[in-house]
Length: 190
Length: 300
Image (cartoon, rainbow over all chains, first blue to last red; front, top):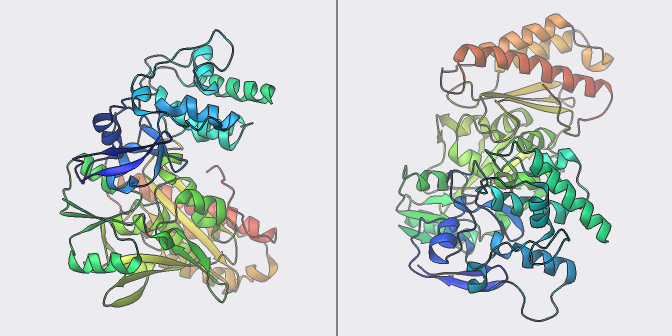
């Protein structure tokens, strides 16, 4: 079957989708967006976290056919998503195109927030919250949603928001640091 | 495999009547796991996401019941129903993770009918009926009768769960769950308790300690009689340790658990007794304070 839905602000279609396929498979294998990671395939690890109509969900547990006509944001579109949230979308060319998303790579600015990264992405780099990197995309999407909803989260809020994302390298402390850092920087910027 | 996408409840019922083997999918948190692991290859998937009314809840005309759409997410239950359904809101908060709670729903818990489903003890203790429907008509099934076996329920092949009618809390409610960590655990065992001052009764629900979720009927009868005889509802005095202890023992006795990877039968029976005593204590303290518990989580 064909599935048409909005990915990172632009409409995309995937063809020859098997009816039992997950959104994660469509993103990675049909649309060429491997940022969302495939690990447990049972919603335990959070590596495949994306936004579905704004809510963080495990892409591995959403059936492809269920996203028809709906909006998905992946880690590849996160920087643009954060930019549009902060500054709005005045140019008319909103969102992230598929080619752009496929080529997306982290280009950290030197210390200053902004550049080509979302504040949460820059904060992960600056706080040393990335080790092997496999859990990072899911954590970024979950953490970015937390800060969107709650710009000044308590430590308990952060732990709760990230409780569905497993990281086997960091011991989580640097990740918590990164979310605190992103929140503090956003607070300063306002 | 075929993917059926009804746009309305009537279309969904018609599709289920035409294809009784169709597997309903809403949040996908159970069904997709089975498909991802090739444990299940249904001929038809019946997507319920397009049916907006399943994600809505309303208060019944008399105000005494919440009519909860089968697909209302656990996140929304936590955010919007903490006052009316404090026990269920507490249970909802222990489900999986934020990602899972954004998708999972009570309808799914009932459909899967796993004895470990977190919503069950809360539904049993609050008092609930499951509204199921097919093209043949509607049935209201008391939740106690809905669970018929391990992962089995009272649904006929052509029926779908539309709503759950849950009694609005008329007193404090509590929920407790044993697991190895706070997030992402399937319950080793769980316990729900609700005080019903209007009828001067206490109701219970035990999860993951019998082939189906069950109420501890003998324990309830004992406690109701003891509270009545001692005049506790009127005086609001503390429940004596001996009453609490006997209640806990009877709750343990209501279990019929198995040994499995998550815990032994002996441990489950023991833990249910502990949770019964503690949840009774918390709920009764809150009754003595004159309030209904607003569903704040307490550390067991």
